[in-house]
Figure 1 (tube, rainbow, N blue to C red):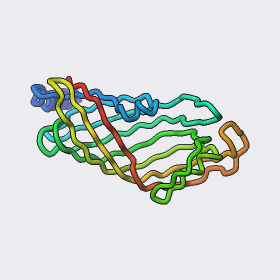
Figure 2: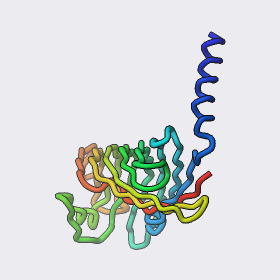
Figure 3: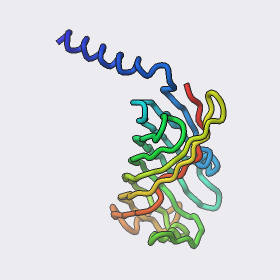
Figure 4: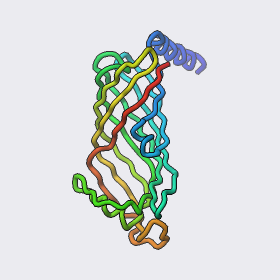
Length: 195
C-alpha cells in the first residue's frame, strides 16, 4: 500500500513538474459582473499544454431599494481547450453551473428567447438552479503577468423554485415549480493575473 501511494505521488509530481516552466495558475475577476455588484473571483489551473480548468464563484447578497431583490450565489467550473498555447488566444469551454437565488421586484418588460423576465416586476422567485453550456473566448496579453479575457457561452439551466406575490411577502403562490431555460449562460470580461 505504501509503495502504491509513493508511486502515485511520484507520478503526479512528475506530471506537474514538466509544466512548471510555463504559467500554471491564473486568478481573475469578471469586471462585467463587478459592474452589476456581483462579488466574484476565479482561478484557472493548467492541466496540459492546451487544457485548463477554470472555476469561478459569484455572490450577490445586497438588498436593493424599493423592495427589489437580486440575491444569489453561483459556482461555475469550466474545462477549456486552447487552440494554441494555454492562457493566450482562442479557446472553447464546456462549463457547468449551480447555485441558489432570491430575486424579485425588478421592474422591466424584457422577454428573451421565450423567457418572460417581466414576471420579475410583480413577483419574487426563490430556488436553486443547475445547468451546463458551451463557451467561446479569447485572451489578450496585456503584460508579463496580466491578461484581458472575453468569453460568451450558451446552454441549458434547470431550476426549482417557489414564487411569492411580492419581494417581501411570505405567502407562496407556487411551490417547488420546475423551470427550464435555454440561452446565454456565461458572459465575462475577466481581468487576469498569472503566476
